[in-house]
Length: 264
Image (tube, rainbow, N blue to C red):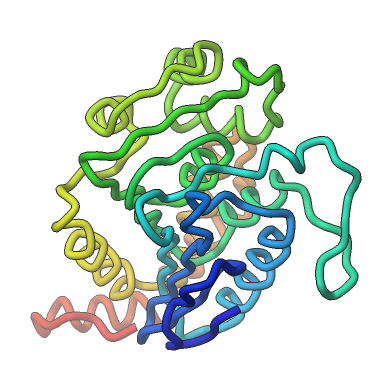
């Protein structure tokens, strides 16, 4: 696996991490197979999530794919197989657990959808806070066509983010939809031409990296809890109260008065 600031590997590999200032980027890196996720990729992703979250200098995560697709989802041949072990001898995590972990990352996340997004990777992208996609992209969820009852948290994400009707359409018909329709139903945050993808991701990442990290962390948690119908109201109110006397609001108010960008 590549590490900080090293170039993307030509050979297929587990996900590649690069770090540029306050931004971390994870790139799925099996382009010959449209970045289809293998069991060993799941443990690698969890390790990268832990490393990113432990680094206080990082303010935003971008998740993307190498080549012409974001991801073809999880390897169908591994579905239903007995749990394996990764290179460290630990059992292979469930795909659902990896997506849940991504959704719960404390820092804001952007999915840079550079092409098609299929199967389980539709949920991986949906677990990100924002999804910027190219206008030539497409998505489909083939579970019904394959005879697979999707895992519950993935269905919950579809329902809470896209609504019941859109979730039913995508899961029950296994219909492929194009980028314009992905935008219309709220799957995409923004749709852009391929040559504008990086500029739009950069723009959003810069905004997120410049905002107050503790305030964003707490509000992201509350929003996700609201979406699940499981808000910890007392904890959210404590975070709100703490924020009214914290260092972030002090700097935010000072920078506003001085007509300059805040320095969090």
